[in-house]
Image (tube, rainbow, N blue to C red; front, top):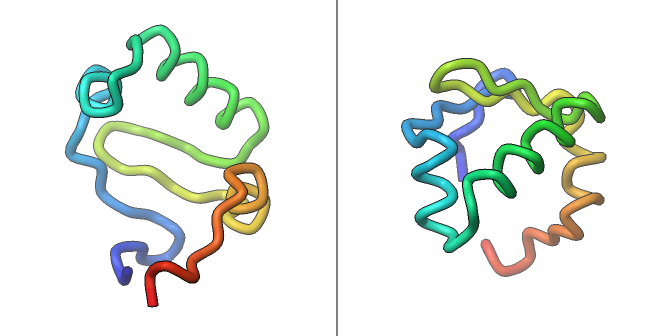
Length: 69
């Protein structure tokens, strides 16, 4: 989508915003983010997320970009 530059992208939403937008509890969102950090898949500092291991993150999410084309 062209939003990632040098493995990073801006995230203008807080964890609470993500939880509300996804219909999840903030506790669940926080625990999920902490697990991704623990696995060293992402770094989320302030309003920026860095994808530390994008291929592994893609595999974990079972993401296939086919629908984007």
